[in-house]
Amino acid sequence: MIWNLAGVFIIGLCTGAFGYLLRKLSKNRLPKWIIPIAAGGGMFAYLAYYDYAWFDFKRSQLPEGSVVIQEYREPDFFRPWSYLAPSVNQFDVVDGQYRRHQQEGDTIVEYIVYRFIKDPSERMLQIHQVLNCTSRERVALTDPAHRAKQPGQAVEMVLASDRMLQTACR
Image (cartoon, rainbow, N blue to C red; front, top):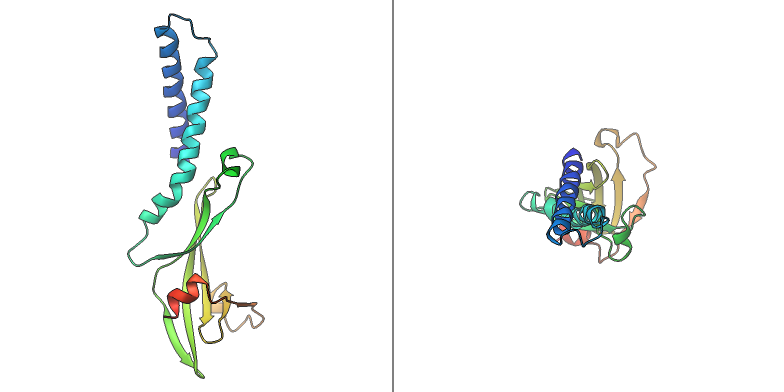
């Protein structure tokens, strides 16, 4: 986050200096307000660029064999450009390391979903999940060590078009 803030200030300074240069090259025929408008426009342009480039940058850093299973796009009041075309705010990834079990004729797959979230400070959540490929049911486990202590987990029915079902149950 600190590097992003530094980038915003540097871009603002550079585009403001460019506005000043244009004003001086025009022999002060351009209005004075061109300098702060150029600085502010440069800052907004950098923030919009960072907003749209974040997902591709994070995806390029994923290890080989990782699969993006879901993307979340939400507009935000503090990013007005996101109302026109929302960028990816967070996404879910599986690394391809599944544990498969056969239990009473059902294929059970255990895996970890990594959720990358772009906030002012980027963070990642690990969500342990169990998927029954036969009955298409999924249960999210908060902590694998407490599986037996939490019998009332919410079972989610999975659609046949679910990307995780297609990836893990082939």
